[in-house]
Image (cartoon, rainbow, N blue to C red; front, side):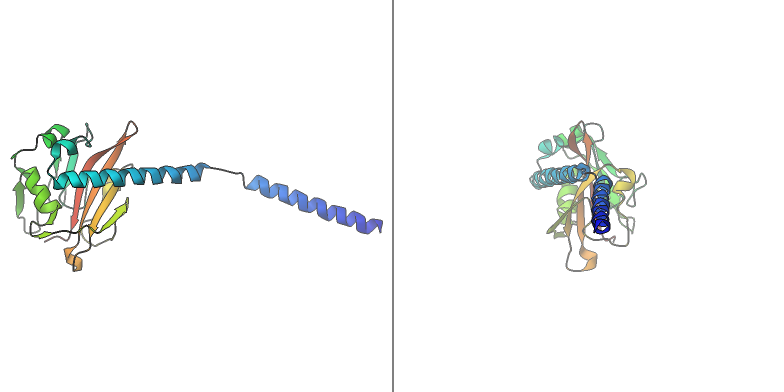
Length: 210
């Protein structure tokens, strides 16, 4: 009887020791939870900021758009998806300062070229209205899908290089599937954080090349 009682005590002791070891192996940590919560807050903030900027572009209110622009970087308008590439697929991309955007006028800029080497030179407002809000100046675009920091679709062609050149940047994508695969169009609004605030540093246009 004593042997049985002793055996039971030994088994119970081993089980309690095992439970203690499991507790030691799995300390309570809130780091991942905090990071997820912070990412969600950033996503919510940038989705709202992008919605505001998109509305301002449709209204041609560049003075208000300029308030959202990074004071040091300005805004780079990538004619294709390879944002940050110093030798853009469509040629050297246009970079405008806060002041240049705020005082939008009839100044002509060379925004890029298509695969036939046809160049597109026009004012900022003409570019926004014809190439960002429309597709190649021909048809209106319905941006029905919105994603955060990732593309809605991955297509062969000019690659999305945002995080290659700006690993800490975040972006919001407005995506229009189009009636066929070759009629899709995306706008990527790219942001960089400075002193705890997010500022617009780029707008990349992703389309099927002509």
